[in-house]
Image 1 (cartoon, rainbow over the protein chains, first blue to last red):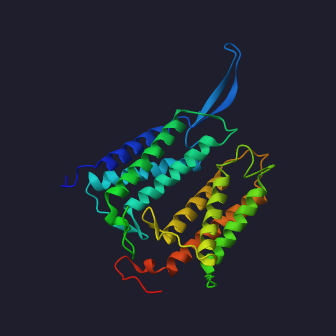
Image 2 (cartoon, helix red, strand yellow; image 1 turned 90 degrees about the vertical axis):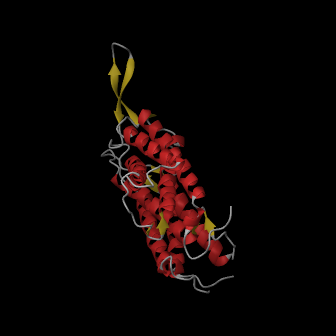
Image 3 (cartoon, rainbow over the protein chains, first blue to last red; image 1 turned 180 degrees about the vertical axis):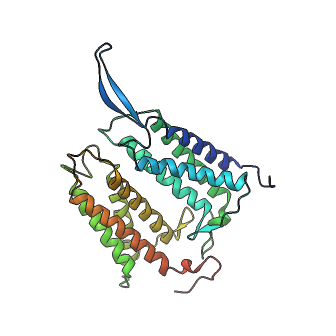
Length: 157
Length: 142
């Protein structure tokens, strides 16, 4: 273990969000009506996870981005893996915000889209995880203003 | 008025316009991106394209002074991120398994083309921006 193996609050939030999203991905995102139970008189439904017909691949992208964000934190914090400081001009704080932004925007859009099948527990897990990813990413960005990078100095908030 | 509109700016504005037009045409058989069950999850890609085009138009034609950075992202970075969002969404709709009776319409293909255009424009914009030279290089004067 290295000296920097103490995760910060944003790190913990991101890891927790990624873990929630990892589990949620295997639970039902949407519940598709599959039949009618004569004995109980109720409509039966079949749950579809992130690999189901209705959710793949957009929900799968959300799921993957959550895992990637958490994995990056785990690798750099606990496994002491040295990743490049920047990827295509982007700092890791910016990448986290970009990944979180995609997840949150897509999940909120799905939430407010009408005429979709019933949402399952997996959907709510992904939504919650996405919001937590945004919180973690914004906290990380605020904690490290010097990582803004680029040719111009960061502005003061 | 700034008349020096660069090719990437033209591509992004054209792509945004194509996506807006495409959003009103059939996305899947019988429904466009604004229809029930599609708004806003399908419309999102078009909104991104239009937003990018509007920002470029404001900067190029209206001389609007926008903040240099938004949440630490430069506008070049932001265009790249947003174009990737739009492209991922459209790739998602392309790979989505639809029932046999449902076809993808002209609106879908226009929006798909527009999203590809956004990525091309954003990458070109990044390549011609001084920041693409690397973080250690000094800023160039304009």
